Length: 97
Image (cartoon, rainbow, N blue to C red):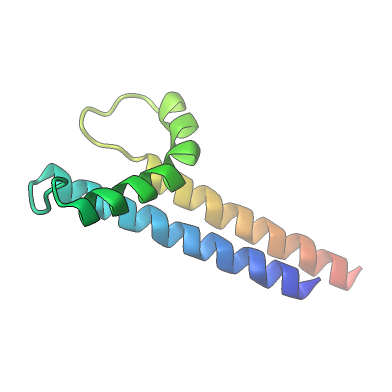
């Protein structure tokens, strides 16, 4: 059981990094540091967007409009860490009881 929990934790950590990389890349594109005309940049951005957008879209619908600031990645990361902690608490309570 612990091996499965460790695997889930690692997947959550990997997804958090994907969210962070996607957010940084979107800032770099918005500020003109990288150009999406470059095929590699476009492909990486597209893959990251396809991986993160299904999880971010419902959060964006719920959050109020804050102008140009998108805090949905922060909310998603906090939610993932919360889920991870709940899983470890459940596992800990199963081992004690």
